[in-house]
Image (tube, rainbow, N blue to C red; front, side, top):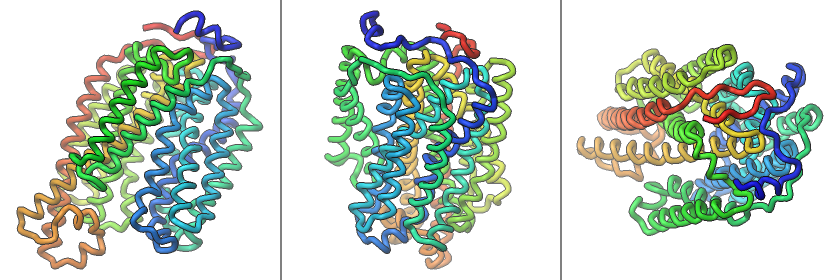
Length: 517
């Protein structure tokens, strides 16, 4: 960025971290941040459990997928915008606004009387959710120097584990004992707690900027992200991968992202400063974050299918059976965080983590129809351990690579790459899984094994099939899991290669400036 461009921001953003705060002050703020993060992660998991009941009440089953898609689109598209607005106009204010929008969307979603209303209000909710995770990470980056952040990252890993396992359980309980409306209303008291702690305890310097918002860049990036999410959502599901709809979206995504890159090079205050990608560490951890999202969302999506169809677990217990993966991630994340705080060294952990993640994927690719739950749980611990080396370290390195004035952009970019990676992971793994299941059923000469029917077969429907067909279907699912995790291991090896190129740039302590590579 030119000198003239930098001077458009008043006061000049400091390159150093703020004055250290007391542990008590930080802990109080952390309560609000943790609750906000819990809101962001729990919502889809809780609502997913209630979807059959919602459809039964509101109707509109043909639009069911849009309840999730509208939320995901709004979240992904708004993520980089929230990050930039926080950098320009203050992180506390934008974070409070994002929580308020999320709560408004939650209240309106709970009041919905038609499927169309629910879809629209879910988009409002997703718009606020885009700022929740970014706000948490960028405020964390502003409050705590990278060298000291390991003391606190275990809390965020614990929230992730709690949300992944507890979300479906909470959703099922609410749906069975209250009503589906409360799957949205439950956000309100949690959100009020988060708002109270943030408003009262969070003290950050007031930021005012004279820079013009990069509306063109924001619009082009939104179009590109929206197109990518729709491609991964609709491809192989609503439309064939070679259909004109998917090809048209692909062309739109490419064109808008190329135009975005061109626009950002000319913008006075770019929505996403491309200079950040000249930093090797920032580029590498963005790629690693994409692959972590790819692998994690793939595992969380397809392991429950194996557990329900092959191992006979219920929908609720299959969520509980993901606990070994979350346990491995939590324990390793805690240990790594403390080690980084003590030594200031981090480069080795992404290398180990990506390698362990590849190994865990290979182990899970060996799952068969006769693998017992203890063995599969051990394999999940390995995969979770690999993720534990990476989940917080990638964000830490991204934030350590930028000045404080770009903390929001760095946080939103890291979050966006992980989100888009998850979308592509679910889409690609879903296509591979369905193809392998379909071909296995066809090879066995089982009728009714077409793509559409297989996608709709639930555990109850499978148990109603003749025993020989059930056995064939179980084998087909095991084969599909094998294919998914073999490819997961291959993709994880790309992350291993990216990790090797990371440089050991010293982590900043409080008050220390950014060091160049």
